[in-house]
Image (cartoon, rainbow over the protein chains, first blue to last red):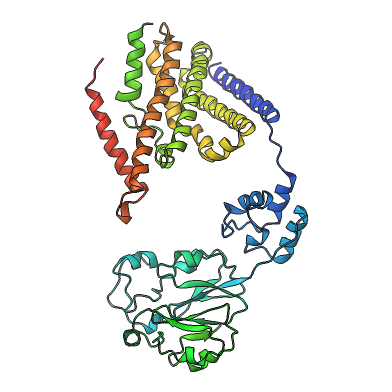
Length: 261
Length: 202
């Protein structure tokens, strides 16, 4: 008896509450839009947040209410997007596909200023006097970008530099945000030429620490036929609205910091 | 049952034994939702509602179910059962009646279920207002009142904290202690100052 009464009492309580909740959930059921589940099923489910929604379900809600465009999803392929557009009865508006590029080519070619023995992490290393590298603009090489990439599109090379695998990259912007040196940028897939340096130091100072840094010689400016590349603040910058990817600047660059991907 | 008893409960629940700053219950939501005053107030009100209702229901369960069967040792599990069910129910109702409110609370509404402040009130009521397995005269009203007062104490702490943190947003704070570390430091200093109320003896 000593054990049966407590069991019965608790069981009874649980039963009452269970039935009560079951009834309540029927009474207070909320009608969800059936399209919501359908759209959510079509989305990739990586919950990367690149679209600006809170995960894939949040994104499904946002496109249903018209807050975000279907094309804001960087992961889903075109076929899935077409299907979502079909569910919504809308037309798919396509944007430009981009891929991340690393604007640094230093890696092991740049020496260390001091021996860094802290946490193996770019953000942490950057807090110590701006990192251990001679070049304060360059890649620190601890691979935060590799860790943060949800698609495995970034791997660290022998040179201690991140390598981006273009067909895996979904331009989710995560590496752009995490890099303490702001070395990543998203470049349209159609454009092949980019400047692999971010140093705003004078040409002489850059040359002293890095063999592949932009020395602001302006040869690229002169070589460019469409006026698309300019040296701004000691660094060559490409205007992708004008660039035709002809590769003339790549040929003339004396330090080979302008590269074709 | 007299007025002084109610006053004592009020002062001790809100100030002397403030649920957050002296008893250290329900700290999760205290740190997480105290960034802005408005959500903090909404959270406090819902906690107050749940503590009050939980006080009522647990009193009935304790008085009419656990004591007659001599099962007072089952109070924790049965109280948790009550609270969990009740919060679930409240969540459903809010979702039906006011979707903006529901989205606004997000994860924190279900989190009230495991907010130990709620269970704390229920257990406290049982400890204070039941003597030798019997309810003291007026214990139902005391329990109800204590439920409200603990909710008030929670509200007070939340509002103080959110007020401070809102102002701190405008200050130049060292990078290393921004956000949560600073919140913990503030909470400890507030707790120290609430210790001063311990001088009041009724």
